[in-house]
Length: 159
Length: 132
Image (tube, rainbow over all chains, first blue to last red; front, top):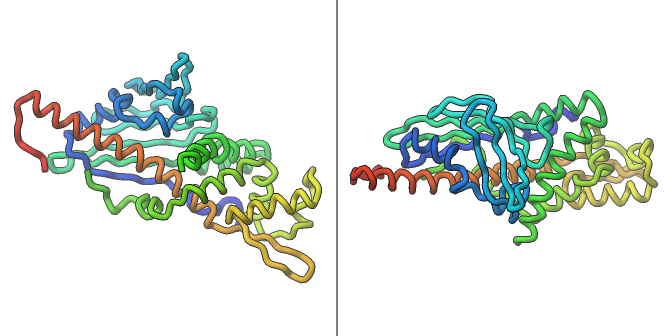
């Protein structure tokens, strides 16, 4: 096996049905993201994180704001098509150069909405890995180091 | 809300083990261990081959390898006087399960908020039909 075949870095796919109209489901996910995003466990600032904002346009920022006014950029909107979906880059706790990709789709299904989330772009780090040794190390460090290590430590501490 | 069987996250989430994930994250948080792990992923290698070219002592390399083994990222077998290290997929499966779990938590919260928003919107508009 070589470094290209490190297993299971294919897209993470999630989908669910919500009993909610498509325009409202899209609005809740985007304009009202601060109402439901689990900031305590899913943020850079953790307990210091106060809110999360998704600017509703292509090029808009997705960021977290902390108690002291600090902002942490999580990603940038690359495609904006309400109420069908949006795409953004995804790099909480990391530099924009280390971004993976997030795609959200909203489809009418019966009287509700079928929501699909796709998280991919892992391979960008693999390609970068082969360019330079330093880039490779940085890639691993950012993907498995800062972001996930801290989260794992939080989880472990929480039991 | 209903989870769809077409995502592959539910299986992974069921297997998720927070303690094991913490071992994996900790093991890969060290640059030397990460470098060793990457070279072992490339192909099985002996301790002496792995130690060559690294700016750390051989006992230190052995200690790093034991940590990787404890995290189930690698496994070793003895061939005469040499110990050969191989990669295990299990450790990376743990990371994958962690990413799956991350989105499960987020989407559960979203679904709850969306369904409350829908009920509130219907109550305001006087529509009493249920969607269930």
